[in-house]
Length: 416
Image (cartoon, rainbow, N blue to C red):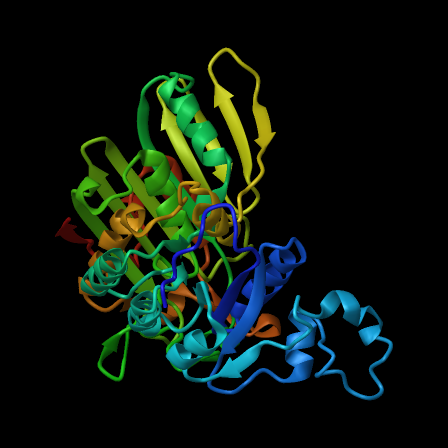
């Protein structure tokens, strides 16, 4: 299979989605949106257990071959719900065979972290272009194996850091370059989220550092709040692996898991420092953000909202909202019109250095029993005072231990 798409033609591009449950449901809805725009066609779904007609209809729409009796009220819009050929997508647990049988030009991979590299290479070997969910791999070696294999195959690969599609990033970079903030003195990021017990039981690999001898590294910094890390590094101009100097980590956990749920990392580069502090045990969960510190002001970027607040000397605060380019849509534009990819593998090398530092660090330290509390109504654990510590770390670029947290372990330092 060639996998080469003629520029300016070939639409809609057939897409296979690997992993359609969990976060994959978001991809199903997004593929449906782009299908309605005539850009792609959902040709196949790869799952160990096929999606039922009801599951597919919930996030994508119903198909003539799937309509069930007694559901005519919901299927009244079935004309808009069918794919362009009027067929339901093919389903198979065999990813390679599915790519072959559907003639897929793009594969969206949203499967467990340890499977990313092997599945990406299965697609690349067939000339199928990729949207690969974050984190791209559980270790730097696996990342290199994936990135090198994709490059050798000559296929396009987009890494699914959706925040890097925000139009706020180039705007903030332009502000920095034009001296709006004076001299940039550092970048912080804060993420205070909450996850209940069910979150860590959703899959065998959830909350694990390793599973059956394979790296997983499903921690707060590397998966749920990975966008905070990669966005902070991107605004710092440190995207490639060689941009990273030293990495300090403090990894802790309140929950009964292997990985970290409360952690911070400080990356030092020739341009300065980036500190990211996160928790999944917030008392009052809020929107994560990146904070650019300058000698003459600051910029706060709530990256999930594409919202920016500029505060600088001699000016009133200015709030700006930006649009965002969808990464699958950008991949289609890259294949058809030569538009530059927004998140090529090499632009996530610095993030993968952080993943590797987390992987090589000692296992996260369990917080003492008096450092966390249970919220029975929400079936989750909280760490009293953690919301303020997360914010303080982003504000001061300090680590938890440097902010006086009695439960914080001595930091581990690795060299990029």
